[in-house]
Amino acid sequence: MADRQAPDTRRSGASETDRLLVSVADGSHDAFARLYDTVAGPIFGVARQILRDPARAEEVTQEVLLEIWQTAPRYRPEKGHAMTWMMAIAHHRAVDSVRTAQRSSERERVVSRQDATPAFDDVVETVEALGEHEQVRSCLKELGDDLRRPVLLAYYRGMTQAEIASVLSLPLGTVKSRLRRALTRLRHCLGAVR
Image (cartoon, rainbow, N blue to C red; front, side):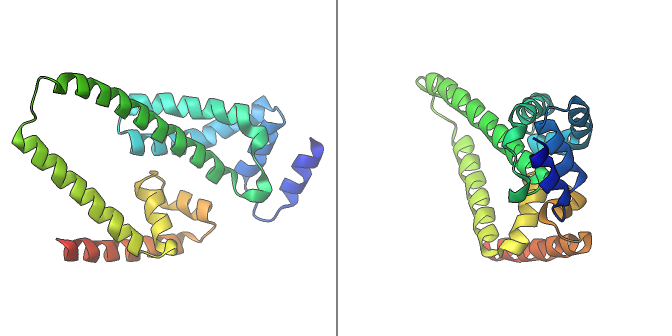
């Protein structure tokens, strides 16, 4: 296990979070406590952004942190930053939670739909909302990867500009500039679509 820590500490660009996760993989409870304090907020932010329910986001945050503790040995520092790895786990767990809730909700709707016909207004609102989501997706696809990634991290994962800079290994000013340009292009694209 000492072999695992040595390359990580020499790897250029290794952050404190990377080193903590390697120590957690080696079984350090102290490192996990420090890692918990560092990443619980950003993980909650990702879960909250996706779930829109603070109570469920807290549950998912705890599930993610438990998963990080259990799967830390799978983390490979040479393949990327620890924060990126952990945020991916958080995102997947939150999305799974949404899908589970949607399946449950859909089962309930199917049962209640047997006797009820939806009101016209509900159908119109649903169609309009789906159309708006599709327009946003279409406009996002038109952005280059360098502009799309900061937008996705900020608005779909709930990361701050500083966290995005860390995850993408970019200066904070570059992240701010890319977000401004991306939002300007999205505004024009969405304005042109309507």
